[in-house]
Length: 156
Ligand SMILES: *[C@@H]1O[C@H](CO)[C@@H](O)[C@H](O)[C@H]1NC(C)=O
Image (cartoon, rainbow, N blue to C red; front, side, top):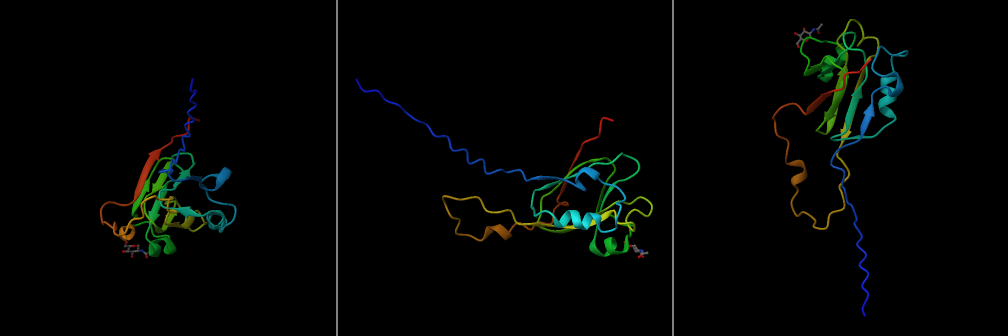
């Protein structure tokens, strides 16, 4: 009699399509920081790549999530935000490049509730069939802004 033992190795190359999730300000959340460079320091602790998500925790109504151009960011000019979210939640950035986040309330921007953040290209997953084309940089479509927002209202 032949006894056959088939060992199936399921190698889950779950080439994680979703990016990592970062809580802005870590435990402190999204607020007017104790020091003006607080969020710049927070950003510098991590390496962000395309499709990563930023979780903004704050009580609705006293802060918001505002994305500006670099020029408006530097001037804390809220006249023409690129995008604005009123509720706490998670912003997924589906693009590479540098983006400028702040809060449009009062003097919060001038007080340091702001950060510039750069998303790099994600590391390429090991591929069995190398692509002959340089298609990676080809999808710079000028569609909508690369921000996906999911509200995560606090229950308290
Ligand atoms: C803010 O930006 C707008 C255009 O978006 C511009 O017209 C205005 O002059 C700017 N304000 C200041 C104070 O720079």
